[in-house]
Image (tube, rainbow, N blue to C red):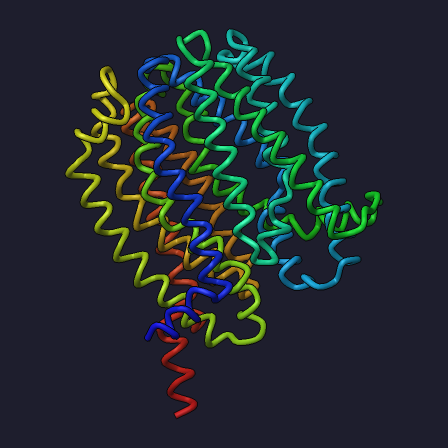
Amino acid sequence: MTEKLEKLLHHKLVQNVLALYGVHFAKYILPLVSLPYLTRVLGPTAWGVLAIAQAYAQYVSLLVEYGFGMAATREVAHHSNDRDQLAELLAGVLGAEALLVSFAVAASFVAQRWVPIFQSHPALLWAGLFWALPQAVTPLWYFSGQERMRFTAFLDISTRTVYVAGLLVFIHSPSDVWKVLALQGVTSSFSMGLVLFLIYREIPFRFPTPSLVWQALRKGWTMFLFLSSSSLYTSANIFILGLFVSPQLVGYYAGAEKIGKLPLQLFNPIQVALYPRLSNLAHHSPNKAAQLVRYGIVVMGGVAGMMTLAIILCAPLLVKILLGPGFESAIPVVQVLALLVPLIALSNTLGIQWMLPLGMDRIFNTIILSSGLLNLVLAVLLVSRYTYMGMAWAVVITEVVVTAWMYFVLRSRGLDPFTYIEKVEGDSA
């Protein structure tokens, strides 16, 4: 028994999951310091302004990162021992991201001119850009593709700890709100420099060429389409809400969303560690890949259901502890957004962990893009009448559509992970 346990703990996948759980344990612990501190120091209005700026920064990061976090991870997993291939991949990605940075900067000048919140708070806009760009460019996908998660885990925990310490030192009033994003920019810049230094100790440097840049953009396109489409019903919601309601109401929704997303951090380590493994198994051993996905659905679906019930029952206490006085209006939003926990756990498993490794990029992106557009329509219709509660219900309805659509597509093609395994076992019997 002891020997089997020791062998299991030395398995590369298990070590990666444990390392990533170290990161996400820190993501649980550190927000218990940063979230209550910021909401109490900034108050609902400044917190809402910060949330809008962060949502814009996430869009900039999405544009520049261009889906390379997933597409390049898959390429590294396929060519992990080919140093020349990896060098060309990195050169192409960095060249493509440099091109996209120029578009992001130009878009930010336009945003400062036309978005009211940035007209009155230009420092927030540029501090957000300072955070978004290095975060997007940092090529952690190089280590993820090689299933070397312990380094990324250590780096993530270290930078988050420095960031939280910086909050306690530099953020003391609502007027310091722009410094929150500036601190994130400092830690992201440090991570980017360190990661690039370590990578170039292992692979040769290559200058980006037009062909390498084009190749990177072509390979990353489907993942970019997925991420940008899914952002229409994730990070876009706060920015959209800010176009219709006051920053104070945005602050209620943003605070509730922070609480609602905390449980999802429990599933991220498993999903990040499994993606390169499933990308490999889908090519060489589809039966084992399907079995792994089936276990993921059962485990994560069951745990997520219990989490949802706990959040709904404990919402008043969670808001009181994590957000503080003045955020009582966020309680019903927390209870509605709690429904997302099992839905996102299931849709991520069916989509990212199963459809993408099987090469079903086109139908996957069709589902995500269509659902993102549905969320925009629902948001406009519901927010205008029910404000931030309307946004919460728009997100939940959209996620129900995403999960159900993915399942029925897989089932109609005979790729339901449960029936797929049963069929294989029946044929081999």
